[in-house]
Length: 99
Picture 1 (cartoon, rainbow, N blue to C red):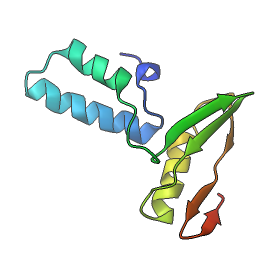
Picture 2 (spheres, helix red, strand yellow):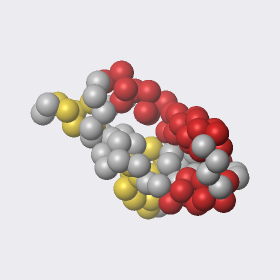
Picture 3 (cartoon, rainbow, N blue to C red):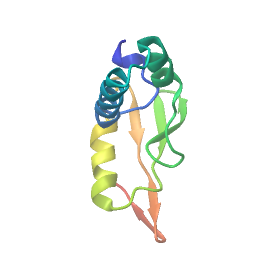
């Protein structure tokens, strides 16, 4: 299964998918079912969630990470798709954090 088929964005999510598939293999779950799940699962709302792609800009909602450090890790992990301009605006406790 190519990484580009995984619905979630970011290297951290690819690693999570690989770990989940390894556990599913150990549990005897069919590989085709695993791949189907990885293509369809969109993740949790507000967590590195792709909202819109328009005119070469990918809009990402990451308004619910637990800390600024996690937000920065998300930014670094999700900033891997070549050819896109990224605008990352996140609100937390009434403050705006821009990387």
